[in-house]
Image (cartoon, rainbow, N blue to C red; front, top):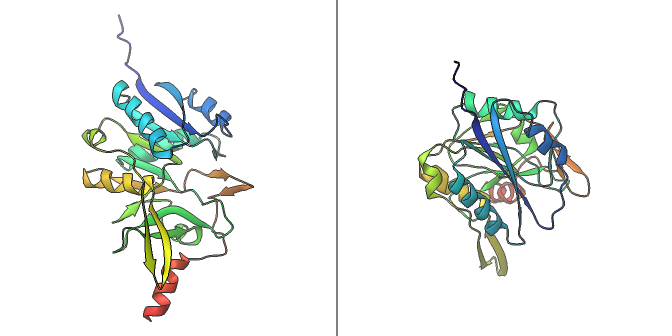
Length: 237
């Protein structure tokens, strides 16, 4: 008698503020992935890091093979996007694969960034800069976002990380300024510190839904580089 092959498991966490979802079709796509047992949980919280930590804790308790964070305002637009996402993770032997997502403004900046000597001000990548890189890449100091983030949850570092937001108000150039270290960048730092291999990709095409759909399918935007760091470079020169 032929022994049944044990299926891999995937926990999909959909954080939402008020239960609204733009990506219901994407969730249906995930149920069609062959040889993977899929469980989807919705996490409703007005406290961003708390909601993400609740999702991560659910994964720690159930121990899936893979964990996918999929924000409710992220919509994949390709046929077979879910297979492509898994293929990229496995082909690269990545611990975490994050899909590049533009911020919901016309400037074309993304929430994917590179560390600088100031942890409060990493250099955000623009869509122009993202398209100067390979479709899927990693580099030193890479900070990823969690909008569509696939994790190999079988690795030991997953027990050692969490999501947290840090804020401060500082005086710069004679004016008080609010600064933040967002939960996705702090997660990236912790994961890397504990041995995770972080990758970013634009191979999976998505729209980030706000007043319009901001997509990652091409180089666009009013800014070709992070204006904060462009200004610093200009002053230094």
